[in-house]
Structure formats: structure tokens, C-alpha cells
Amino acid sequence: MYHDFNYEATLASSLKGAWQLDDVLRSDQDLDFSRNFMPESLARTAALTSLSADEQRTLNQISAHQYLTIFGVVEEFILPFLVDHARPHLLGDDWRVRAILNFASEEAKHIHLFKRFHAAFVRGFPVECQMIGPSDAIGAEVLRHDPLSVGLLILMIEWMTQGHYLGSIRDDGDLDPLFKSLMRNHWIEEAQHAKLDTLIVDALAEGRSEEEIERALDGFFEIGAFLDKGLEAQAGFNLDALEKVIGRKLDDREAILAQQHQAARWTYIGSGMVHERVKATLEAISPRAAARVAEAAPLFA
Ligand SMILES: [Fe+2]
Ligand SMILES: [Fe+2]
Image 1 (cartoon, rainbow, N blue to C red):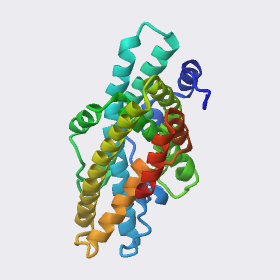
Image 2: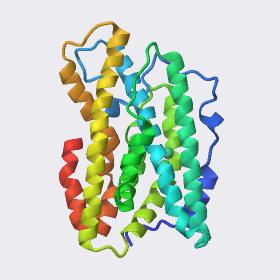
Image 3: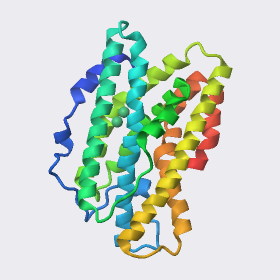
Image 4: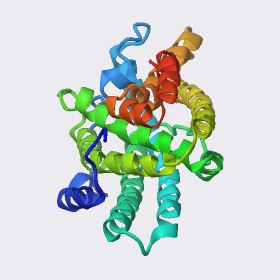
């Protein structure tokens, strides 16, 4: 076995580490708009030398608005996926049933928390930032695929949050402390989710032929391409918001758009594709699938 995850231990860790919304952000707390919200390794806004320092910070904050929005969207399809996955086996293994329902409940809490942060963002930011959606239409498009395709995508998303916090957020002292706390608390609970996703993918892949796994991977790439189109559209909305705040059109808008789209590709897709745990799961279910993902990964770097 390539891991030692199990439902009982994961549930125990989840119950021990659980937090309440007010531990992370009370509804009357405000974000500090004099600071960056996102680590540079994800936002890549300090690299835009045609922008002043203030403009870079504004775009960094818009990139954080995107983070809230994108995670809102993905957690809204993770929730029904989990409920559907649990439903046929409610009378089976008690640890499994409780671990998956607890996972679903935490994801509902995260949706709630991201909305609370979004409200705080809207209160403090001078213009409206448009977002892709509606989220239920995005969710329906994702969920029409084979559950193994969706399971692999969710596996990647949950491990990538581990990379986001561990790789860049923990050591970045310059961020708004409330945003940092969001990332940290999300990371704590997602650590258990990612293990459960591994068990879910193992179960969904069990007994499938190499050909069936290949087809599920085709579905995974289809969803990835669909989400990538959404990220490109979102990058455009982000620059619209930036232009409104700074009161001028960007001369090099096309170049900034491409650079910011690439930053989002890395944040929401690429950083999951190259995560060691994702690679290990792919290797275990099909080395051919692992090779296909490794081949595509540089596009999202
Ligand atoms: Fe979450
Ligand atoms: Fe999660």
C-alpha cells in the first residue's frame, strides 16, 4: 500500500482539529487593505513591473478575491459529490460513514467561511469585482463526469491547499493576518480531506480496467480544460476591476492577462498536478495515467 490512511484515524484527527467560524473571522472583523492578502508565489503581482507598488497590492487583493471565489465554487461541487458518494453505503462501515459525512459538513462550513471573507472583502474594497459563475452551473458541468474523474480532480484540489499553505503562506510575514489565518485553518481541515479523497479515489478505481481508468482520466482532463477557460475569463474580470480602481486602462493589458492567467493555472491546477501525494495515487491506480498528468503539468506551471 502506498499510504496508511484510514477512516477511523482521519475522523479522530478531524474532530480534534475542528474550529468554528468565529475562531477564524467574526462577521464584524475587517481585512487590512494596507497589506497583501496572497503570497507572491501564487499571485505573481510583484513581478508586474509596469504597475506601481500600490497597483500591485490592489491586484494582489483582487487575486485574493479570486481565491475566495474559486474555492467557493469548487467546494460547492465537492459537497454534493461527497453526499452522493456516502449515500449508497450508509449502513456499512461506521467509521467510513462518519468520516465522509464529517468531511461534507466541514466543506459546508468552509463554504460559509469563504462567504464571510467575501463579505468582508466587499465591505473594504472600492469597486465590485465580477466573478465567473453561476457556481451551480459550473458544478453541474463538473459533476456530469464519471465520479472517478471528479474524484481525481478533488484529490488534486485538496492536496494543493496543503502546498499553498506549507510552501508559501506559513513563511510570508507580510500578509493580512486574517487572510493568513484563513489559509492556515483551511489547511488544517483539508489535510484530513486529502487523505479521505485518497481513500475515495482508491475505492472508485478498484476493479477498473486500464482502459476504464484511461477514460476517467480523459474526463479529468476535460474538466481541467473547462476550469482553465473559467480561470482565463476570471483573469479578465480581475483586470477590469484593477482598471476601475486605478482609473486608467492598462497599456500592456494582453501581457498582464496572460501572466495572471498563468498564475491562476499554477495556483488552482498545476500546484495540484505536481503534488507528491497526487502523483503517488496516480502511480498506484495507473502508471500510464501518472505519466499523462506529468506530461501536461508544465503547461500549468
Ligand atoms: Fe475546504
Ligand atoms: Fe476540503
